[in-house]
Length: 106
Image 1 (spheres, rainbow, N blue to C red):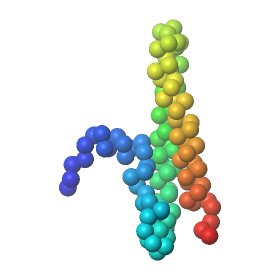
Image 2 (spheres, rainbow, N blue to C red):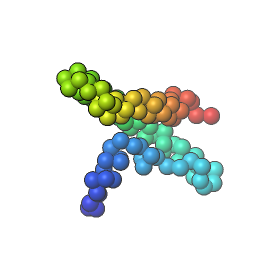
Image 3 (spheres, helix red, strand yellow):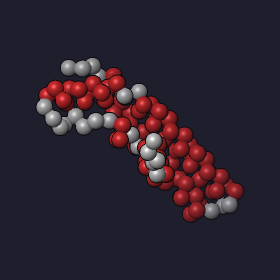
Image 4 (tube, rainbow, N blue to C red):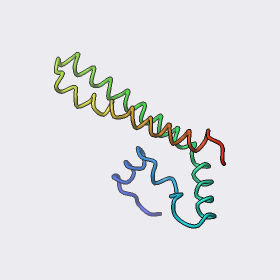
């Protein structure tokens, strides 16, 4: 079994691009097969949404805790920024899930 570096594991834990195939390459049959493959694996997008949601909530809570306990609003920005960035990431994941699962095949 091949050992995967921690950096690769961390990337795969938070980002889903490695899981899907490129639909823009190949002939019409290869593209259709890649789209079927992506539709079959779209259920993993909900897992990534949950991960980003919880990370956003934890960072928001840490930011509030630092701001409340330490009275350091400047330091709390370190936690509020990743929390705010989790919102557009979840929007992108949600749009991808809707595109693969909800919209019917043409």
